Amino acid sequence: QVQMVESGGGSVQAGGSLRLSCAASGMTYSHYCMGWFRQAPGKERERVAGIDSDGTTSYTESVKGRITLSKDNAKNTLDLQMNTLEPEDSGTYYCAMGYGLCRNLVYHEYNYWGQGTQVTVSR
Image (cartoon, rainbow, N blue to C red; front, side, top):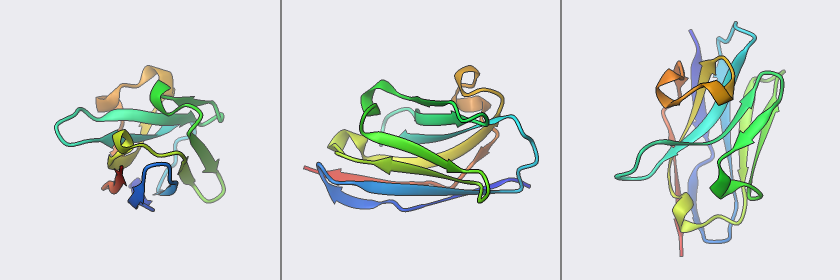
């Protein structure tokens, strides 16, 4: 059974940094997309960044240049380094995994989700 566990959320002031980590276990399929999503109160869940099993990364436009994914295949971890944070980055961040390529998956097609970790960025 696949499990995704996030850690590293917290509260920072605008301009600060946070690093989120996702530990995945039980994965047996070799072709998948792992991604980070976020959801602010009253808003839809959006994908922040994703990485295919071949290492191809993708980022939503609003975070490009500020957020970086790093994946450790040996440890099955996916980290999200977030710099120059803005209040608009606040929300609950979720790690997810879906079978297939990131560019072909929409939110409801991801198969496994973590419980979420809270990120709050104050002005």
